Length: 86
Image 1 (cartoon, rainbow, N blue to C red):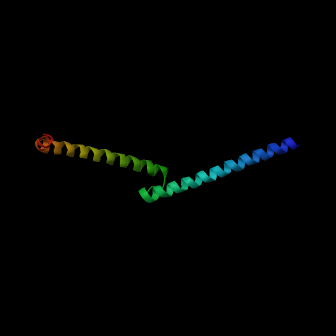
Image 2: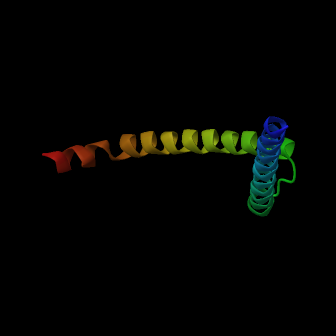
């Protein structure tokens, strides 16, 4: 009988621990979702994924524009830049 009681107590403790961890995870998820909504206007994970793709496209476009501007700058100012190195 004592063995069954010990087993029950251990099982009960494991269930309580798992419930506590689940509650903490839900709370953390709720906080992250609030932050995503405040910062990016996303209420769901699907919206977040869509926003991420949009931001990645913007980043790639900005990088391309920057690279083009740097190339043009180097082309326009190459003589002046070479003079400074000498």
